[in-house]
Image 1 (tube, rainbow, N blue to C red):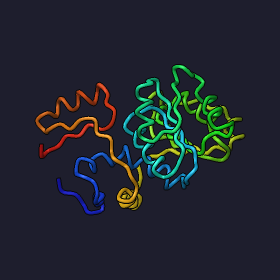
Image 2 (cartoon, one colour; image 1 turned 30 degrees about the vertical axis):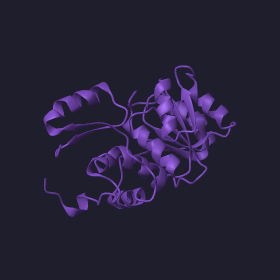
Image 3 (tube, rainbow, N blue to C red; image 1 turned 90 degrees about the horizontal axis):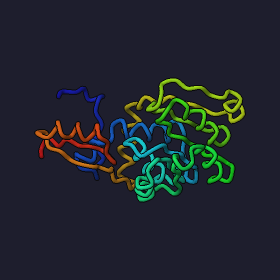
Length: 219
């Protein structure tokens, strides 16, 4: 593949090629959301939905930057893994379907400053209720539905900022890769396949994985 130099960035010096391959999209979208738009600071509270590839990086990046991370999932096993990655509080949304109320309880009624929204649909309204005042929801996906109904009174009362994020720009990606040499983030790789195993790799991806699936051309 031949690329223009403006379409590439240097990998972090401390990362292997396989680790670096996990960074575009899933990792970078979180950095662009939390740092470029959110100006995240130590002590902020971040709500992360689920434990997919984007969400795992959200947990790692936010906690590495000093934030308190709350994670939702339907799996207690995955919530335990989220704690190992840096989450300080967890919510099983099957046990607590009104998870936005649980977020408010866990934050003593203050809400969270940042929400990485990957579900979409009816989740948006719940996310607004889980927020603190004048803070951020970053819409990076729509697993449930591309359309959402929101309570405009809640939106106005919270003065919420709902920002659509479509990855990010070149300069921010360069900042991100430089930062990764300074902050302690070890990308979670579920399985590494050889190129000859590409079909198996995609089948694994379709079934679901905890972390990234990597196809190593040199393996």
